[in-house]
Image (cartoon, rainbow, N blue to C red; front, side):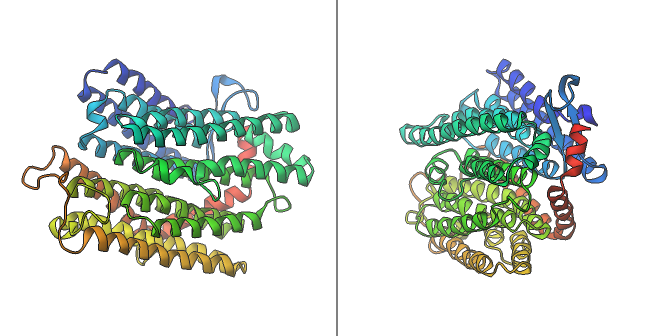
Length: 495
């Protein structure tokens, strides 16, 4: 099984190379991408099962033992993130193949998309901070190309905002690596878990806060989120969907990994994290309410929902972390789905502005259902997956007496429902009103059925998460226990 561990990173990179060689054949590129990401999905699910049943799967690249070589490790958290990310990457790729736009018009789409996939997988699997930095740089390079591919001046300007902020975060990350290495003599995460414990509490706290800032930029935490609502809505809908669903969650994953592995109860900034989570929730949802454009509303909701995940971390209990992990699973699926539905609505109605369109659900009832189900889940209404995840977080908060944070999370959930009804009432209900750019219902664009198929599959997956909430929460609970007691992680890596 150890030999399989590098494949989620290696296969997309090999696929990108093959896709470049097939630059002029879009059909061949599609086959390569679909085959590679489908294989990655199967491997990711196998790794998750293996990690859950038998413990972390570890591979030392080149036969060099840790901490001297490159370590890859898949524990329960990494396995969950790999599996969910792989399913999303395949689904968004299918949607992009159906949608007229960047995928059809640019031969660079498939190689860059596969490089992005490799970066995401590497971030989840890496066992040292330097290679986490490398994974972030892979994602940054690929995501900038995808953000600006085939775009006009506005899209390129928004992409520049994204890349400048990301480069600042990368420079800060590299500085953090230098300081951590100077203090501990290593960047291997398992060895850092041991050596960080030997440092004074103040130094450990300082490193924890520094890494929280670095990854907080990637995750779009308050007050480091302002780049996101300007960058994401201008990109093509499949690109926005994969960014919204996955890239910010890589930042959340890095925050959870480093805060639980490097810090203990005496040095964790729990109160600060809860304050940041609360403000992130409130600012994000208020920003969403103030918008009049579907992609921008959904972009602000990314910020708001990140607050729930960080809230679970800030509790630093098994129940809190389990709720955060379950929330991450729910949010990746639902947010990806909503952005893809927004793209479909824009194709059908000609615009995403609420003032310019209306009655989409009356003319296209299937599209209305595809929006309504994930929207209700995002708002946290029962019996959808969002309700289960939020209920787990609320229960965890109440169990440790964090009543203010719990009250804020419930209020934000109500405001989220209000903003979703704003989209429903403005774009999907009322009298039909389309712009001149709307697709002809008698002659729909080629590939529209493929787009519907992808969105329908993701809606079904989100419903399946709600139906399997019990087993998924139990898995999240086991993952949280493993995170708060990282001895097994350290032993598996260092031997």
